Image (cartoon, rainbow, N blue to C red; front, side, top):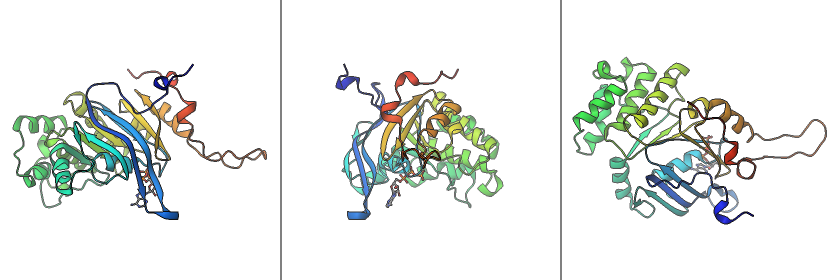
Length: 287
Ligand SMILES: Nc1ncnc2c1ncn2[C@@H]1O[C@H](COP(=O)(O)OP(=O)(O)OP(=O)(O)O)[C@@H](O)[C@H]1O
């Protein structure tokens, strides 16, 4: 007999160290007939010291989830915490400070300042905040990312992969509680993309950081510890220790089954994660 506690709840963790948490997180854009429910009462725990990937079909709410967890966007309902701090209800100025001091960001476009060299770009957010980078930590970040001999180069003198490594170092420089990466490999060729994913992995494994990455790429998601699958604004499934093949297979199950050629019933959109997929279907673990 199923009990409420036995219900499958993808995205929820029992671990102590939770870097970010949302309960009943709901985000609607617009109103009336044009209203879009981008997030529909999402409950999620982001575990500290882990690499979490967020996947789902286009429009499923991935970016909205990231923006709401990072305090970049307001919520329509529900509550969000960064560590023990509830960020829902904070004033703009407090949110700005919280993001600056406690969160690192990486985007698809590297967002580097062209007139500054790599080192100046890395420390820019801290300079703006009037903070001094901690020397040993910065050294560790620079060496982990293999940027030691590129620090005096300006972005135009760096390859795309190197520029994204600088952006990664900038996100890490203040030793944030949480790093959000939105399609960080989207503008890179596969080799440079792999390199950046390897560095994010090292940031978690060697530097103890917490990373949440939104991606469309099953190969990128395979570098994470846990993939959360979104569909129609809900977390419908999760996969631990993912492989690219298993993620791809699972993504295929979100595909719309279009009008079948045999004249049988059209099934429409089938986000199958919630009821059909269970923990015991988790694919073999990666070494
Ligand atoms: N500013 C906005 N105004 C109105 N609707 C929005 C806005 N931002 C997002 N949406 C809608 O909310 C839904 C979720 O969007 P979101 O960008 O979070 O999806 P996504 O999964 O990140 O998509 P993609 O993979 O295409 O980037 C979509 O239907 C989108 O059209």
